[in-house]
Length: 319
Ligand code: NCD
Image 1 (cartoon, rainbow, N blue to C red):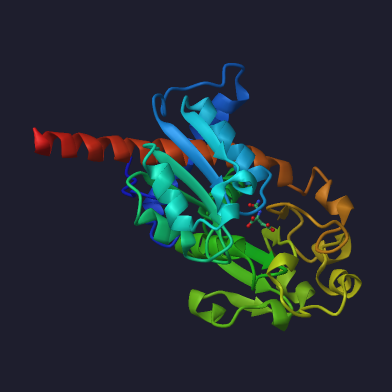
Image 2 (image 1 turned 180 degrees about the horizontal axis):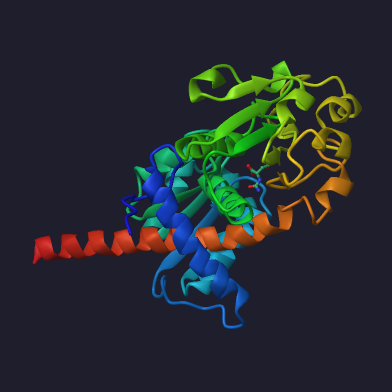
């Protein structure tokens, strides 16, 4: 099995075979997580620190659980009560934590590129849990695992990603991953929420949702990220739902067995009708959460293996 990365900062640097290797290992952890003794030793003796400079429910909980199930010592740094509030910079905070010898650092930050910068300053494996509108690699990987399990493959699928694309790291990581695995990606959004330059990723762009959903295998909905909007991007939430909210009428344009995804948190009645979100025949939103724990276990397991190998080599060089 090959996964030659020191950090998991984005999907961009991954080779398709590394994505497949990570998803294959995740399958083993799905089984473990469904058993009654949910414990393995892959991270035994290692210290994992979670630093979340932005709100999170699913991602933080799932990284914490993933580390604990693999036997790591897990610490959640509470940013709200930390020296960050006293004006300490991200790098100073990281260097302070680095001095405590963590092995895995899980970081979420509102600025794009902040996690890459931090990775240069510490000597442990860094996992990006979402940086600004840049990347959210474990979300794209858990989405890929969910799709692969539901559709039986992860290639030659038509995947429609709809809503606030402009502010979404989830959309960005997903379109890179789905493109690498040779799927057809369609982006559906009003022009104000479509980022410039998306054509370079080789995806099709739609502002009409009905047309964009035609024949789709997967419909991925995104939250309107109001915290990243500094002006009026939509006329009103009601109008947005009318044109871009997923309801049964619009969904009927996709394939009859199309699955509906959402990374959470959802705004019911804004980007998705609550009835669709709760429809267990279409919505795989709960499966996405389940896959999230397994994918994070696999990611940390693979990075820890590389870290141990690297440290062993360094020790042998010194000997
Ligand atoms: C996403 C995020 O934080 O980027 N949430 C998540 O991690 N599940 C999407 C969002 O906030 O809308």
